[in-house]
Length: 157
Length: 157
DNA sequence: ATCATAATGAGAGTAAGTCTCATTTACACC
DNA sequence: GGTGTAAATGAGACTTACTCTCATTATGAT
Image (tube, rainbow over all chains, first blue to last red; front, side, top):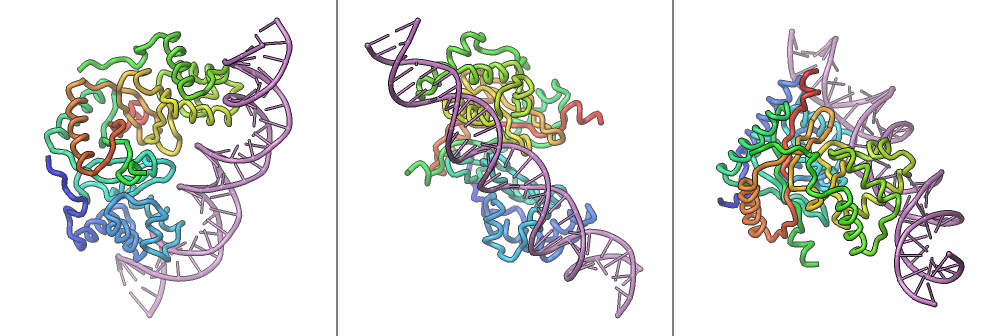
């Protein structure tokens, strides 16, 4: 298992914009300037980000619009909402705009870092989950596998 | 892999109360009537519950006290807070008061059901996570593995 | 260029959860 | 069993992440 950097995107920036545009169009949404800046802010962050972090990177974006657009992007399959990190939601690109990965969630500061596991383990996890889901009459969409603990910064305090 | 019922607790009710009492005492907290009723409400639910669901099962408990006590119980290692199910936190007993398990999270109604995976898979997951955590200087506490999808009730609509 | 429609943004509104503080309860010691 | 002290309670004010509203503006199709 190699630890990949989150800065290795599966798509180039222009391909990302094209893919986002296509997904929005498929849901009858427009790829406006504001949404483009929002996508670029998430891209620049390179990690799951909260709304305040987005507004810092892309000042001038109205919070109400960012919230609304994160919603649109989520429903269009562009973005995932992560709620494991405390009281503030984090956002990141959804698959396949970003490769499948998991999270290190800091229980102290709520920060979230991406990590990658090997495909064999992912396959066993999916197989096992599919089995229990079937027994419960549950229709699986995706899994989330997060490690909760203390990040390097918080541990050294 | 056998699908265990969540109604198979690792502890009897009196053992549960004893264990809770001990954990509270270890943190210099008292096991009061209100906390006892709260613990029993979570026990009766048999699934991760939200605050309104607790108040229904145990009417008369003041919401502010329930919130405060859920906090105390969480910090004393009695209860886990689950934030995967939308905007409302769910609570359930922590290990080892409840055996290690995972969740089916309905993306429609936000309900959460417990499922159990086999120990071998859990071990591989822990091994892999420990490896990536070490590389990131992250101190692991616990992992969460949730399956997101649509529950039987919501799928049939 | 025009037009219909979607998107924007400022601010009001909502609701989950926290804080405050006067009162009550639980445990330790006698 | 009483007594004192410190923790727990509960009602309601408060905070804040997020959503809604609606008048204005930008977008993309023709």
